[in-house]
Amino acid sequence: MTFTGSDLSAETVRAYIRAKKEEEQAKQRAYEESARAEREKLHDAFLQREVQPEAMDRVAALVRKAVELGEKQVLVIQFPSDWLPDQGRAITNHDKNWHAKLDGFAKQAYDFFQRELEPRGFQLRAEIINWPGGMPGDVGFFLQWKRPEEM
Image (cartoon, rainbow, N blue to C red; front, side, top):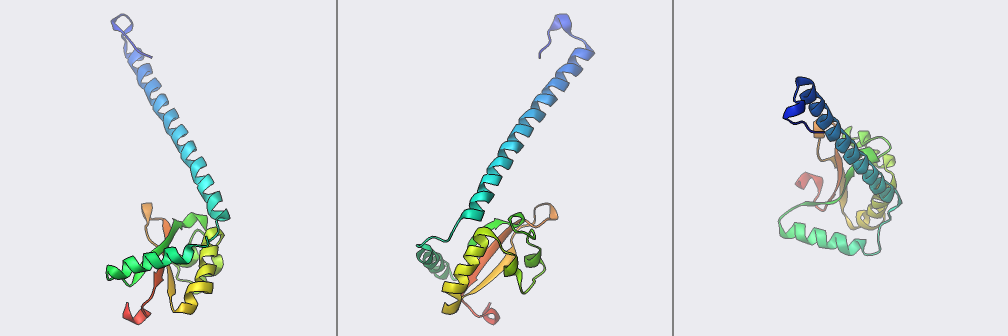
């Protein structure tokens, strides 16, 4: 919609503003729908994903880089807290059985940790790493190799 000198009126201007606003809202709705659909695809992939055979080599590379930087832990996985059945509440509340609330790849990763890394002396710490709008955001799994009292 547009207006010219011949049809210029306050109502024409208001109609133009309404049309522009509706156009922007439609674009925003389309964007949000597209983003929601993509997020659902990512969540589905997260639920289906399994730990790959080369995982130990990838973890070793991450640990090596962190050690070279003088770190005592490394972030090994990050995902939205709302992908957990309890939306990350067990992690937020420091529940000692937080791992029982895991699902999908998070559970696969924790099982890998228990099977492969815990027997080698590593610890795993889960925490909410960001709080957008004051709400739990992403969960981070941190692999640690120092004793907690050394942290």
